[in-house]
Length: 57
Image 1 (tube, rainbow, N blue to C red):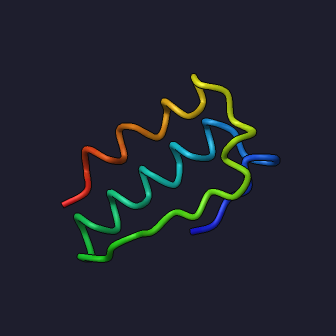
Image 2: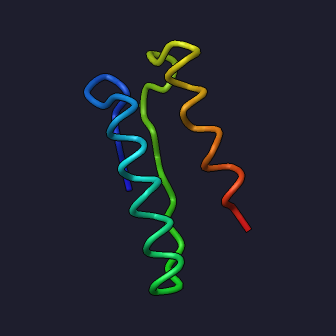
């Protein structure tokens, strides 16, 4: 998946992570998220990415 932090928000990131979990659990598919311009996210928005790290593996 590819998102741009200029146009995307926390809601979009959470939707991608939810879909990635479903794809992994139901189909055994791994998802990679490329988040362009991540420096545009503030700290709270960047923190929304942390739960995704816990699901890796």
